[in-house]
Structure formats: C-alpha cells, structure tokens
Image (cartoon, rainbow, N blue to C red; front, top):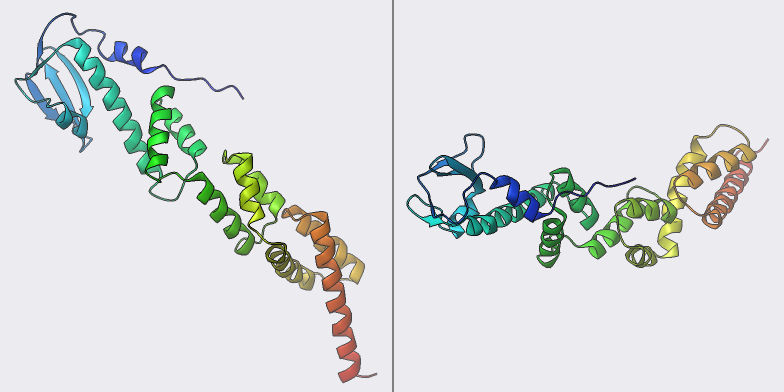
Length: 244
C-alpha cells in the first residue's frame, strides 16, 4: 500500500496566508468565535482573515489592535496546526489507549503534515499518553486471559497495530507457558464438551478450533492429550458407578 504523505507545514502556511500582503503590518480588526467550534476563532485583519485555536490565540495575544507581520503569522499557522494535531490526538485517546502507529494514521486522515505528526506523537509519548511497551504488555495479557487467544494470534494483532517487533517479543515472553496452557485448556475443554461424536471427531475439531485461535501446534497437542485423559477418566467413573 502506498501512503500519500501530506504537504509539509511550509507549504500549508503558504496556502493559508497566500493572499496576505508581504512587508506590511497587519492589524487585527476583529476577533470572533466560530459558531460550530467552542475553541476556534476567526482573526480578521481588515479584508483578510485566518482561524486559530483558542490556546494559540491567547499565547500570541491575538486581540483587536495588535499587529503582526506575515512572517509572524506563518509561525502562528504552524503553531495552530501543531495544536490542532495535539487536540485531535488527545480526542482519539479518550475512548481507549492507542499505539503510536494508530495515532499517526489518525492524524494523517485529518490531513496534518508529517513533520507536525512526528512532533505531536513524540510529545504524547513524553507525556505518557502513548506507551507502546505498556500497551503491548497489557494487550497480550488481556487477550490470553480474557479472550482466550494464543500467542500467534496476539503477535499478528500487535503487528497490525504497528508495535515494534522487539516490544511484541518482550510482551509475549512475559506470558508464561503455564498461563497460555491454562488459557488454551479452558478454551479447548469448552469446545470439546460441545462436540457430539467419538474421540477422533473431538480431537480433530477441537484441534482445528485451537489452531484458528492462534495456539501453536505443540500447545494444541498438549491440550488434546489432557482432554483425552480427562475423557478416559470420566469413562472409568461411569463404569464404576453405573455398571452394566
């Protein structure tokens, strides 16, 4: 898949300020809140105007009567784009944790420039809003213990979320063989007991089911052997308490 990179900030600045005159003091004549946004404002310079986030407006003291050169406004446009990206990143993180890859993809969808995306992702990482190592660890534990998925399944999911291979390996190494076996055994036992048929049918169908859920062949063999032993043990109990 080819990803089309967005325009860099300098190119975006030129578009936003394309009609603004050069080498001229531009005086703010009016400031008004955008009707459909609580945090963005239209800054009027006579017949010219631009929109900025409230935080940027306050930081640069964009109030009526203050004046700016076009070069200064170029800096403000970049700061506004950076703030927009940061707010969008935080909004995307509201519902659940995200990986750096997921945040990057989201900001690209919002047509934010690559340079600013990199800066915002780094800021979110420094503030611990994005934490790929912790994300990978918690994801692996949750999928093993609650969703009953095997390590192969989890590895693929984390790859799709853009987690670094080394972090995936580390997260999976924290899952003990005993934990994965217990997860596979509970999942396999439930499937085994639902199957109507002889032992060979149960082994075949349960084995295929566990493989689809991402358990390794060796793990599946261990589970099937345990389930077969349990089946034989139950049969012995039936003969003991319910003789012919």
